[in-house]
Image 1 (cartoon, rainbow, N blue to C red):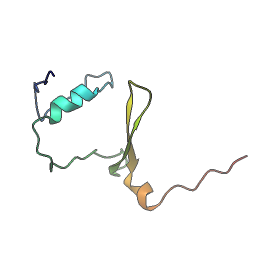
Image 2: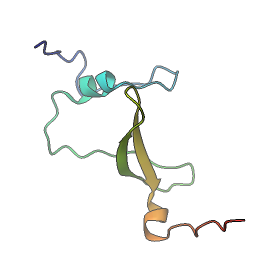
Image 3: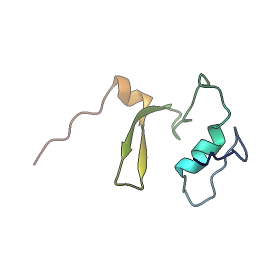
Length: 82
């Protein structure tokens, strides 16, 4: 089995194409301790973004779903069906 070595552990910048691969993420966090906290930043309005779930879409797309903190405590009302 081939073990990849991180090239820049603890650091990653987007490439301007809004593309992120699992390999990019693995490389960035490869040498970090398991108890290092992760933050997803915030919204334009100052709300915090929280992790919700991972969800596979086919074989080549991992969705990392985030939710605004305000909706965790005050979920939006369900839409009314026509």
